[in-house]
Image 1 (cartoon, rainbow, N blue to C red):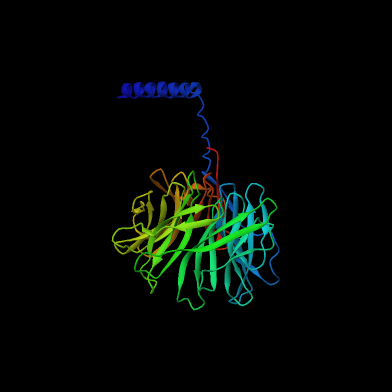
Image 2: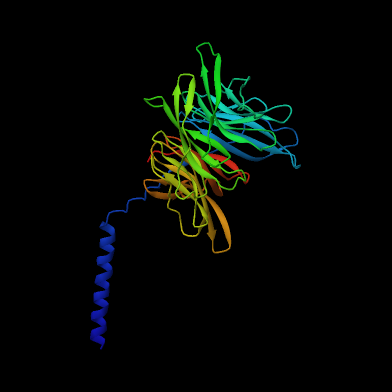
Length: 391
């Protein structure tokens, strides 16, 4: 017995010595390379002084071009029910903000840095407006269709084609509208229109929300939705428009869904791919309709209750928002990206120590991959810009 114990001690001692030698000669482990987040996140915050007694309650980026300019607004409140707004243009590379004219709410910016949106008149009515650049202090009006009193311009392409909608004061009549705006070498503005983009047969109204570029041939495509008089039968559509210099000839509305499913168009790229939301078995979910095809629901996580695809770039990348049921108790909203057939929660793509609590929604994406949206940061609803990091 004693002899066996001595032999066991001897083998244990040898094992310890061998282990120590191996540790001494083993190469040092390489340090783990930190993972670079896919995006840097930048808040969209007005650098201009807030009105006395007012605090910021939210900001929004409404549009983004491929050259790195964004338009939107910041809202301020004094605690009452009324808010005031600073409407803004941002050059992302230089981080320079421009304060836009009072009463002008921008909705679109093209690659020439021309802006469209809506201005509020002294009597409370609204008219579509055009600015030649962010420093333009005198907006040009884009008036309504005949028989209407108000208009709103939502998007502009590089050829100066503008889309939006037109309506009368009591809301009993409304239609999608299209204008053409040209700027001469001296800075003079020429405009014509609007032309009506007709609703689907049997519908009473339509709204145009986005358009693509005029490429090679004088055609562009517009997306939006057609709906009935009761505003209940929304249906995503696309129009093809023949553009000949300063005139436009819109074609008929073409549905993007099967069986008249409730749906809305959101964004369109130069290939004619359209994104939006569509009713699937009682749920409104994001879709992508490749050019010439009908809407195909995008993949979503389990327990998704609602979703919308807001924009699509020329690479086929789609951004939007999902509402997901958590632990069968409450819905939480998330900003999502669909890329190369994969759905990506954008909250997982930024530095977890960035200070952002939640990315609620993504609304725009340009061809360089910059994404605009809204999240919780210094306030609950702060607009953000996600800038792709070199990988």
